[in-house]
Figure (tube, rainbow, N blue to C red):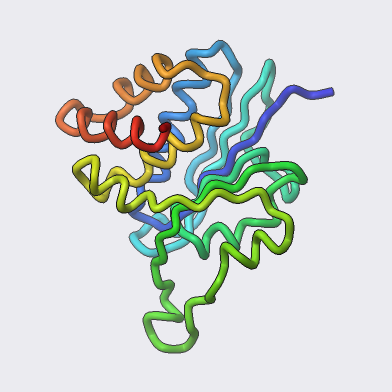
Length: 190
């Protein structure tokens, strides 16, 4: 039986999914695991849907996560959580920001943003935690730290020490943004 774990980071271009995947990958390596992180798939321009795959274990051969395989999905936006839900394995954990970012069809008036997405996912027996990560990031000092707030939330479910996570943040975040990001992580972790 494989010990490989799979994490998907999903969001909208410009939300910092790549930084989040770097922080996770760095923490995993510090814990002695083999890790594979995919490139960002999707429209990385601001506003397009993006996904990054992270797989880790004793030996990992591919970063790609198939449908029904993700142990965790961390979503930076509610509609993205719903879009990628089929990739969550039975018994997996969905962590999502409660933030809503209108996709182009909503902006142009061709569609409406779906309502009650969190409740609808819960009705499907999804283990989902919705967090107001944007407000928490603003409390930390910058709305751009939403991604690191969500890494703090994810860290609650991973058996890695806070010191490892802090070292990963120090390695991946530019020094001028370090204090805000460390605070954002701590607020998400608690």
